[in-house]
Image (cartoon, rainbow, N blue to C red):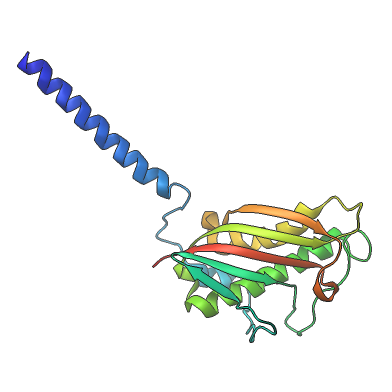
Length: 189
């Protein structure tokens, strides 16, 4: 009988330890731990130049932090020359032009992250992306456009750049810009 109690106790203890281990592992299973993780170096290898985003022109901030999450305000496709990519997908812009516009937005959001954190290596993962496409009513390739943004995040952050996402069409966007994207990022403390 004593032996059966010891076996039962050992089984319960082992099972509880396994559950605790799985719970801890499940919490971080969406974040890839990699000794080579270096988004700053990836920017250089991709020849991506970050840009000063200046001060917001209205009553908002570029990013707001809540705990380990950074919520980035929507940004548009302002290019290095200071001009936005404007137009409507399915009308005056092609999917390829929209993809490039979304990539420009990604560069602008990476610039905000760098300014907020001082170093992109502090990004634990990209959590969520909400992409808005200035599109004609019959346009159907919103996801292909926002891929320009998502592909850049994965190129810079690896698997930690993969995120939940929405890619939706809008009847218009401020200043007729082609794309606007907002993002949620988890950061290391």
